[in-house]
Image 1 (tube, one colour):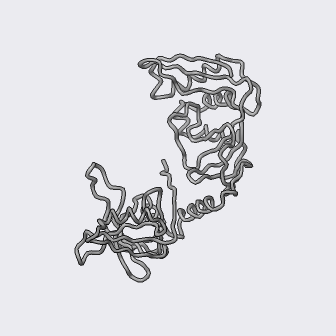
Image 2 (tube, rainbow, N blue to C red):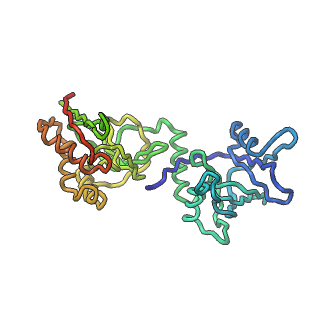
Length: 325
């Protein structure tokens, strides 16, 4: 699964040298946003700053650094590998220091840039992926994502809830393609634990079917608790309650054809022993008409089909309760 990246940038950096180093060693430093006093305070604490041993702080514009890989992740004292590499960073005026760079962001640099003897041939600048420090280039994919994130933060009024199928819509953390809407005929609550290995499924049939809006995740979002057929990579909302930013558009077929294409992929066929029954039951629950369902036996068949193909619940005893809203 694709790992989620949420980038933040800053105009100036503070480089806080560690006080624990030999005289001739290249300084190991903490890098943070120069305009954030709390980050500088954390950096001083990391550096061992005290009354008798003050750390040295340098300030630079966050632009055009040279990166050289120095050392790969070492074993953690708690087991496994650390999530960062030690890299040498050199500024435009030839000041150099070492710092820890997040492995995921370094992976993007290795894929997008040329390296010669460990040195990135593109100039880079600092960003954070959530709390992790990294560097990116203005020539890569992540820079475009950063520009979109910065735009969303700076232009909150650019949000909209008026979409057409094919719109690429984003929040700061998620990216989806809007596909359209269908009417949901019944809802299924998460299985209720009754006793050991005994569960109850509560199904609510809508007397008035509810319009649902469908988005296909660009990052292959996966929720193991989605108790539905085929919705493992789809986000389905009661309304467009979160106002997304429209950041692009791509031509798509209508929602019916998109669902057909989705159910014809190999992953769905393998999970459901072929896709035709899964597709049939999905369309029983979601359709373009808003006529309520009256066939409770078919509703039970839907739930039993889910249970049969769920590795966790399939061998447990269960009861199905049907009610109306």
